Image 1 (tube, rainbow, N blue to C red):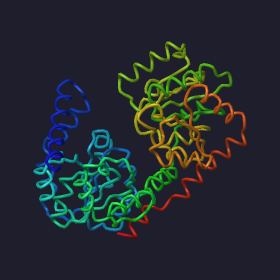
Image 2: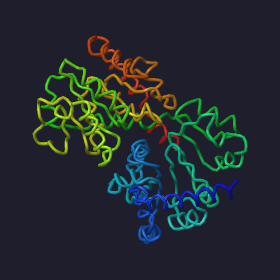
Image 3: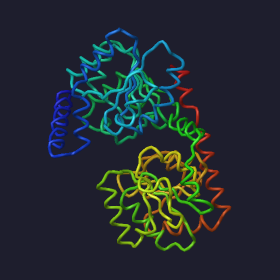
Image 4: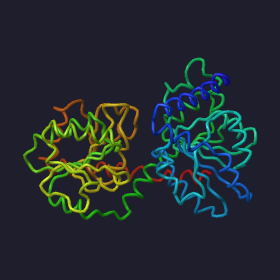
Length: 413
């Protein structure tokens, strides 16, 4: 099975190169960023510092791991921290992050790359965030007796390494020094497979969103544009989310305002969004932040944020928050919105996300399957002030009640 895994990794690398050849911008960044990784690492390790290595797949996992990275750095200023990413969206956003001493791409997980990377870095400890299972790296780290921790991991019975025929991969999970998992269910799954080095510590994302909510954030032009209006802030939206939201705005007669933050802000998606606004005859009622940031049109009722990095702060301006992705592979981060004490709405594909299910159970979030259900929920919340406040308070309480994972992990370490 190890041979099959290594072959799959090589084929993945070839596939990325093929996609890059045909012009995919993310694939091009993925390849270019890894081109000189050996030289980068050689320059970093020339002075023989003591290193601790944190690895995140992308930006979401980074935000999850960030509280631990920063507290670990405070507790151990004598150590250097290397932060690696697998995806361009993570690396390109955080390549200048000053909480780490160095940031770079993770090389493709071949046996040769893993051997060279670990040989050069010689980390004292390694932290993989959430779902990062790179088996050649795990083997290399285990052979060198380097401590490896998986942080804020969550397990389900149907994950591929628990299936029939994947026993060799399950065995490799034994190479992890310790798992810090989000819930008892995950711990019980591991223990049922003979993996006992596990602690239920919770999810560090709760600590991160609480920290973000305490940071000062203001945007005078947007706050002036909102004034006293009832506001929906819709984050990480995809096309079907935008269809529902814009259709609702088209019917609205109350002066509602929508802040729309698409998941993708590249030219193609923004161009499609402009076309949708035009077809719905909303183009003159909408404005894009990049075109009118200094003087927003007070008569418009749709503001489209075509810049990255603002979403987590914008949720504080909402009366109701909408989380995108629920009509696709799955919803995005609900906690960024819930921490501000605002009701959280999302589409039907949320079953893989424990916090979304918990928010619904606590009366803090609502899911809908179509336009009609969305409009019924909006009518209920916007017309019933008591219900709106009660739902928002339940959201904030849920987040605050689940804080503390970072300190729990550090205590166990």
